[in-house]
Length: 139
Image (cartoon, rainbow, N blue to C red; front, side):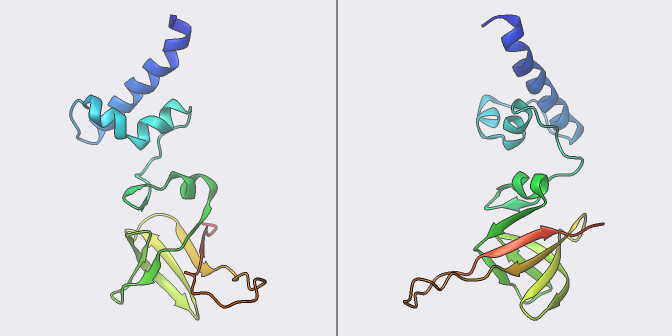
């Protein structure tokens, strides 16, 4: 590998270390590099977000932030003013019949969560988890 091939890797790694340092983290380990969604994002040529993204199944949910929408099957009302989406708690801002407006940790963009229509063409009733659509609302 020559310098031209290594350069983007080196620059992404330096940027990753800087973001970690800016957020009070020390020098990362090789294990940190192996498991870092942020480092993978930087290596893909994307910029870090201004604020940490919401989590989905304990990992950064970059797809939701980047696209503005995504789907989830693991959604339930915790009954305490929070909606649990893919194992993470979101603050409920508003709700109606079968839909919610939520914010990650009560901050940042507002997302609308509503069920996607179920495909009933199969002819037999099966117990399937509903699929929910999350869509960022205009600010």
